[in-house]
Every structure is written in structure tokens, then in C-alpha cells.
Figure 1 (tube, rainbow, N blue to C red):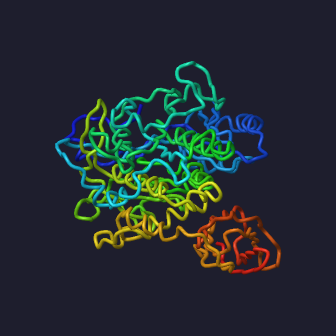
Figure 2 (cartoon, helix red, strand yellow):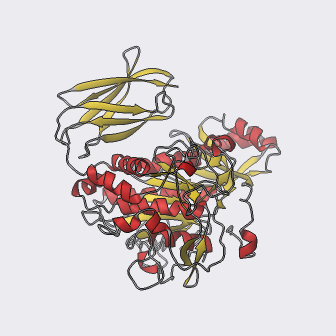
Figure 3 (cartoon, rainbow, N blue to C red):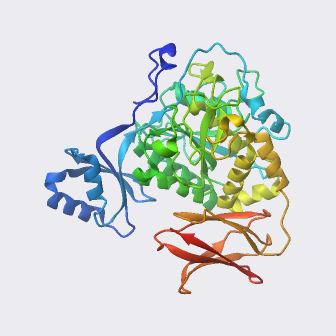
Length: 535
């Protein structure tokens, strides 16, 4: 299986990030809702026999109608072949499968202190919460997609998420989710409940949630939290893993918190360099799908000194409002020279140099790179969800998407400005979880103003969707309509209620013609509108 191969600690410190590895002939397809894949595949194979036969179908996501195929023989010109295949009736999106690149560079384990928690202000937040539970007692879960984990490490074992719907090692699919014995997450790369022991994933997990205050080793950003472990090797594995995460969060909601898991963030310390989101449409769409259920994603950029706005990077180049992208900063509050950057695509910096964390076989050592920076951000998100604020905890259930956007907003607004990051990230700053905590704390009051207002809509012009920031009475239901210049209603629905003074909602705009639209909000007493342009 693909992981960082530890040829030598010293050698790895100088290796560049691996070139993205496309898997020859391995195709991901997302079908239109009314498509009949079997008939379409037969038609393709009958009429395009000289252009590669599709075979070996495997369903990656029943929820989103996504399948994996082999193209035999692999096309000589993959880009031209893909362009033709995307025109096939019934195909909503298609892309090639890739092996993932895990971004960290392990080095010498002779450092005996953790500098990062103090640097990002986690120690100041620990005075009020050390993580693990919301104010209403819900267990907070972080999903980690990585190359494997040491599930018996004494500083991790107690914080590993357990699927309560499964009985371990009985050979049965007790919760009927299609996976047998997924008691501690799932190994999607080998279709197994057993995780391989891996340096990279074990190191990431330690930063997020090594058990704190247990007289053992180190403390994670969260002293107590549950980490859902998902072993992945390829893009197709990632699609399956993200679907699993969404299913668990949805089950938590529909079972009224009795089953599933309250996953609030996924950690993506992996990616593909020099590839844009438009070239991986199925993968890229998963971040909005996660966000629609209330789940943010912290994602690493590349470990190479390039501008990803120009060169491309996955998933950092994806425009989803639920994605938070991270570069690596050092103790001088500067971008690490080997880290990529991008004033549009990269949101903020976080410590990723000489980070002491867990290693396999009950050990500890240093971990470097954007893969080390990213779990500081996902860990900070989980810590913010444990704020002792009843209104916030209620909003997690009543308005999960809005709550996720509120958390992202305070995370980015709370950064510590750094001249070393100016012009290299969207915020020009480095993660500061204590400042974000205070911003979230300041919003922790019910809104009873009773006045409906549209505060902001962005981006404007919009492309795939638009964020709406508005003010409304906390107990009033607000409906929305999109009206075109002909006076026709093109989209309508209801916004979820929320106690937050400034409420946020991401509205996806699928397949609408470009042009001017009017957003109209109505709470039964007031009606307000604002124009925006869709291009």
C-alpha cells in the first residue's frame, strides 16, 4: 500500500513532494439521478470498442451514485479520452483515479518539547475547555483520512472513535452499513477493519488528539476527543471514506443522536500537486456535500515552494466554503521555505515544523510539513466545538451548516497577522485558536432584534454558489427565493433557524443560467432583497 517509505530520516528531509500518480485506466464516474448505468455502459462498449472497454464496476457511493471502473486497455491519450467520455449521456461527472500524496517529511526525533500549542493559544483555551464534548454532552468526532494508524498507542487508544453499532470481530455487519466489523473506522485501501501501522497517520492523530493530562507522552490540541480512523490510499478510497463520514453524521441526526457520530471536521493531510479542482470534479464536490451535513475539512497544501493559485493543488484549489486550506509555518511565524502558498487558495498558516507527536510502537518524535500543520487546524476546529455555550451546542443540531460556517468564519477572522504570511495566504495570518474562541464566545447570545436584514452576499459575482449572511429573529422561520430579471422564481426554500446574531447559509446554484438575480428573504413580517450576478 502507498505510504511514505522511510528509507532514511536524513534522506527524507531533502526529498521533494512526489509527482502525482495517476492510476492508468482507473475511472471514477458520477451518474445523473435518472441514468441507467448498465445500459449506458453496454452502449459505450458496443459502439466504442476501439476506445477502451469499461469493466469491473465497483460502487464507491450509493448515496451519490459514484462508481469505479477499469478502462481496458488504458487510453494512450487520457485527457482526450476523458473529454469524449464526459459527453456520454447520463454521466454527470468523470475523472481519473490517483494515488494520494501524504505531505509530511519525518525527521530526527530528538526534540523534547511541544512549542505549537502555546504558540496558537491552545493553552489559553484549555482554561475553559480541553475538548471532547459539546455543551449539551454530545461527543465530538474528528475523521482522519490517512495511510494507517497505530491503534494501540497508549496516548491514542482511549481517544479512538468506536462504532457503537458494531460488535468487534464477530464477522457480522451489525449496523447493516455494508462493512463487516467497522468497529474502529475502516481500511478502505484494503477493504478491511484492520488498519496498517503507519508513521504518517499516527503522527497526525497525535497532534489532534493525544490524550492530555494522563502522565504519558504529549497532549493533543484536544485532551479528549474521538478520532474516526479511515485508511485511504487513492482518490477512490477518499470518495468512499467521505461517504462513510457523511452517513455517520446523517445517522446521528436522523436517530436523534442515538446512533452514528457527530463528526465536525475531517483532516486531509494529503493531496495531489499541480492538479486543479476542475480536473477532479467528483472529489471536489465532496467538500460541499460534507459541508451540507455540517462538516468542515482542514486540508494541507503541497510541500513544495510554488504558488498553487497558478500551479494547481488538490484539494486546496477547490472553492468550497466548507474547506479550510493550510500552509506550514515555523517558530519565527514565517512560511516554511518548502511549503506551497497561494493568496487565493490557501486560507492560513499553522505550525508544521519540528512538531513533537506520537509515533508507532509507543514512541514519540518530530513531524514536519503541511501534514503537521493541518491537524493543528482540524484539532482547533474540534476544540471550538466544545465551547461551553448552550446556544452554540443547540445550533449544531438545528442548523449544522450555518454552525460550520460560523466556526470557519471565527477561525479565519481570529488569525494572528504575520508579515511573513502577507500576500501568501488569504488571511495573511497564522492559526490562533484562543482569539477564535473569544470571537465565538462573543457571539454566544440569542438574537431577539426582530429585524430582518441581508448583511452580505459573497462572492459577487457568484459562480457555483453564494454565501448569505443575514440577521433575523431567532424564533422566526425565514424563506428565500431567487428571482431572475424576468420576474420568475428560479429557486426557493427555507433557511434553518439559528440563535446566532449573524446567521450564515451557503446556497448552491446548480445549473442556473448566468445573469442578474434577486435574493428575497421573508420572515412573515419583513421582506428584504439584494441583487447579485451569477457568471
